Length: 264
Image 1 (cartoon, helix red, strand yellow):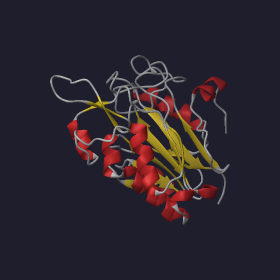
Image 2 (tube, rainbow, N blue to C red):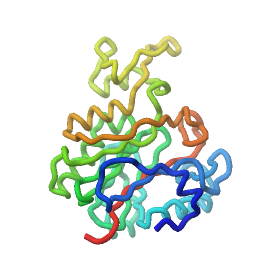
Image 3 (cartoon, one colour):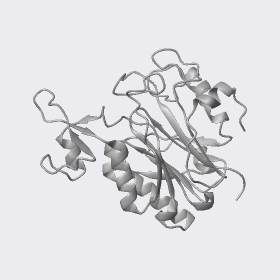
């Protein structure tokens, strides 16, 4: 399974969380690929202007670390969730921002470059999911929708599900306006300081610093999830390790994979 060079395996993020041994999960960084600047080097995004041959090689290298077949999504910052199975792999990439599977050997994949990847695993590895959660997706309920799919498939309670929050734009860098507060049913006068810290005005308009990991944790907690890990990396500040759309709009995309190993 770990057939790729040790340098690539060492550069990726391997989630440290409480899940069954048959659950595989990992997240890419910038390192270990063949793309040239500004997509250097392990860009997994096909729609960012990079050489398609380079992206294909990057995807091949990264996928080889998993031993699973990935379902790539056409992400639109929505809350649609699809079932990742062998039949879906042979069809056109679905338009969705989350995927779940209970089929071993099929990887749920989301791509990010400041938005947060959220991985979910049911007890015993009976079902897993990956969600693309920027502020629009979080406000729209994409994480809750993915969680519901996992719980239905695994016949489990949310309290039995483990969640991992991947790298995203951090709370010192995510400047937002009142529209984002409104999306989370908050107002400038009553914004939750744990989620939105008052920032310096930009062009005369009030601004806030949004805490995406905290928003995700609180939504997961309200949904009943008790085991939540990760959410400690900032894609903007860790320039050499992660791509960031806000920092460099013509950069690449990271990928978060989760799958079930072995037979049923």
